[in-house]
Image (tube, rainbow, N blue to C red; front, side):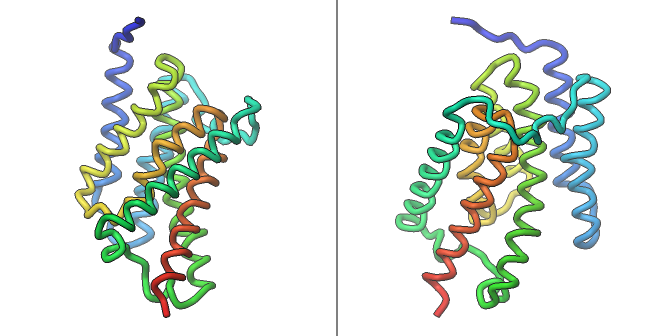
Length: 214
């Protein structure tokens, strides 16, 4: 059994990752556009600069649209299937259906629904994909392989803990994050994990609207 030992460089990188999450959550931002700008700075810009000048890597290489393994799409299909099963179980056996939040405007207007999904949700997913898969996983998977899927999930849990919000605010992201890591590990591209998670969220939201709006 090979035991991986954390070195000084790992400590510095982990500290920087945690600092970015703290800045993302706690940096004072007034208004929608300031919040968006702050998010880009702490989850994309600073990790890009750190990767380029400290790790000597290109953070955006994770954006390549190429499947390097024949069974890569199998990981995408498995991730989607298991995510749908988990969210269905949560809706069935918990109070998630009573708390799941979608704006009345989004529920009652198809154009606003598409606008919400392809701007608000997509923007959030881009941030999370670049930081948690491209940055966190991109660093750790070279040294610990598939265990990097767990590492990026743990960092995501840290962010959720810092946000201190009820679980229904982030349940869809939380469910898909491990599978997004699996998809990225199989494909070496966040394009597939991004598209998979966006499809998952859109379909769950659309199903929820269809079942609740009369």
